[in-house]
View 1 (tube, rainbow, N blue to C red):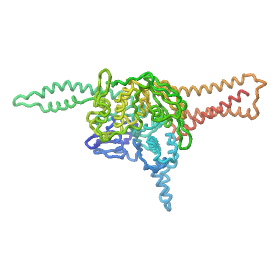
View 2 (view 1 turned 180 degrees about the horizontal axis):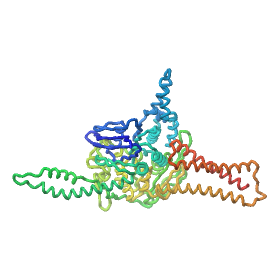
View 3 (view 1 turned 30 degrees about the vertical axis):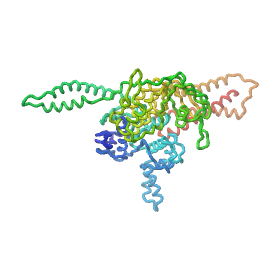
View 4 (view 1 turned 180 degrees about the vertical axis):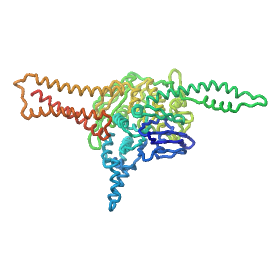
Length: 630
């Protein structure tokens, strides 16, 4: 296997803080590697250094000669005067530079070096770059190609940057939180695209299903050391637990031996004697191991929530719509009725733009419905985690920001946690609690925001995209907290693993005001949806066959209007057309499931399939009408 990347003894410090030290890793051609570490350990900084956007204090990064690198930053930036399609050409990559060179060559008298440029354009597939850009942008629901970048939301900008990175078709792809701001359909498309691709991949993501299905290797950074696991996320969990068990056993043995050696060290040496140097040195190594602390998060944090009555909230025939820039209405809710149950844990899923966050804001009273109303129970006490985050005083210390809310957290039964103890449970060490907020990473600020929401003792938690920018360790703690939470929960999230762990009921926003109520988690919903699609297809084919047989055996009525000559021709033609459409559908399905199709084919076939279904329904309905009179 050709080594594409070698990272040797990499160290980076920020002020008096060491983000990581002595990092070594190697990635070979075709490997798909997931990088896992806690927030604040410098994951994004490490990716920036590898991609050449930042520097290291020590060590080096070496790529194989000729390897083309694509990099998706966590927070991409573009000039505000660009349009969406122009942004796909703005970042200096090999293909866009080649296009600019071609244009310069054409504008230069005599066209020097034209043939060489033409050959390179052919080799890099530069001729259809714009078409590829539009195709992938469409797949990521960015359709207004001439819209100014300045008018895009942060999520739309991230999707433009993701499209830009994929269009390049690099040899080595680096992705920093690629699933943030993608809806579930986009995540599943990206998951399939990357798992089929031959590109070498290094990525940071909190989406555990995504890690499990895409990555063949996991690299964990823990306490400044890298651990490599040759398998997917499920394999990593198993082997990591084995490693921790061994480490705990070693620390336990070291503690037992340490007591004996400590007694020996405290004894005064005999006259004209001295302690053996080798044993003294061994003692200090043993002391370091014995004093090593392992963070054990096995204890579940069960907090007391405020009393909540039987009346939670009722949505009474609520309607809401907005006007698009094009002048067309965007319908969010249409005469929606729902009575929320006590202790219910509901998940809300759907494509971007279908109104999930708007629904939450109407429930909280931040947005008024056009008609209908939300009736909220008197005992309900909301805790709201907003997708937009919280504005902190950056000059305040972490512990002070929490103590402004409460000095103690009530766990019930006379048990309390201090603000410091509560923060420690959410992975803020005593040293980090004394840090100023401006020194925190983006993920650490989100974690701090989560703490401020949970410690207010709510009985109804409303969490809008809580998993964005949180590390996996924090997500596991939050999952346990929500499973034990003695109150109501609504979660809007695109993290399928998180939803499966937490919710037992879904509202699926399907667009145009249509909402499906499903009793189960996300994986169960997808299985049901897939089963329904297969059943519908089989039922339609069976119904058409039975109808044809019945129409053939049915005695003709003298009063029935017979088919005209043109209708008879149409009837016979429809039979052939339906057969051809069924064959085309089977061929498309086979291609999509083969795993060999290019991204362009997948996009085109993905567009064709719903149109084909619609055409098949229309022709089948017409065929049934004519068969009644044939």
